[in-house]
Image 1 (cartoon, rainbow, N blue to C red):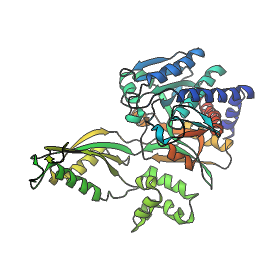
Image 2 (image 1 turned 90 degrees about the vertical axis):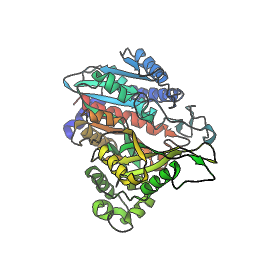
Image 3 (image 1 turned 90 degrees about the horizontal axis):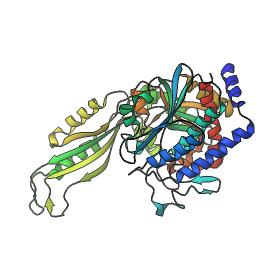
Image 4 (image 1 turned 135 degrees about the vertical axis):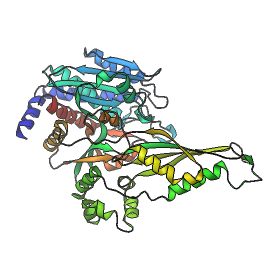
Length: 455
């Protein structure tokens, strides 16, 4: 511990206090400008982000490479060469989700600074984190001190739609980016300030998305003369079966570790249950209580399916020959998606509905005994006394699943501290980031990566 902290302090002394302040201010200006770059997905247009980042790298004299997976779907990567230790990758996506201006109090692409916040789509997910990574990358370059490993900055397209034009495409078409990598940091976790404590969540795994399309075909006809079955009734029957299916709970090790960590600061009402969730979840009525308390935590106790899209006839008096529905299933990372899909097929087999897999990833869990995870623990403890670190499980997905499939320990983490109340703004209205918290996060991120590359 003392050795590591001394290394961190030595790294921080590489630049003067004025220079450290400069990178924080620079990062804020970069983020404000980056928010104005329209990379809303769809359609993405992430090549605009590539151009933006490229201009900054060029000004620093840093070489980079780019590639488009499709017109306008740009990706960028750059490498600082170091010693023989396994490379560290900083991975970010540059696309953002849509924003409806009529529900915002400012233009979502304005980058306005007001009331101590920088407002705009992507400030939290994840252009803010991306700029923190860029600031770290540039600071390492400016310091000019030999690194113990290569550090690779990767900015990708399309994460918000699955990553197939971004990280997934790079893995397939530019595998050299990831060769020799042994650590990766991405989005997925951060500091969360509650009334009781400051908790740093580090995402080590995620529920596996399994997106499915259900299709039924039956005899069409006039709406005034219904048959015993139709494509629509078959879809309705299948959806009803899935809706009524309980999806029995099971507490996988990563989720159990997360709940045990949460128990350390939970209210008396939840402390005992969190400390032994495998037992608590079996109690009558507990699952319903947990879901009312936290749909997110409830989702971590079982596989889930949400009905999100369906369609049939385009005319009210026509019984269509075909009807369809799409469902968003998320399964725990302890078994292949094929097993889950086969179970669903068996469940609805009597309805005559066919299941097609739109998208399914593979499960993987990153260990917590790596140099990067330890650096996160030690730096946050030193810089935020009284805080603690918790390995967390994400109910959503990030591009880390691509790199975990490659065997690279991958962690979702940005040390920025965000109050609980702000999380609803992610993918929501009036997304924003505290200017002070962002600047502090830039400095903390630099210290964490510095502890790894100068270890």
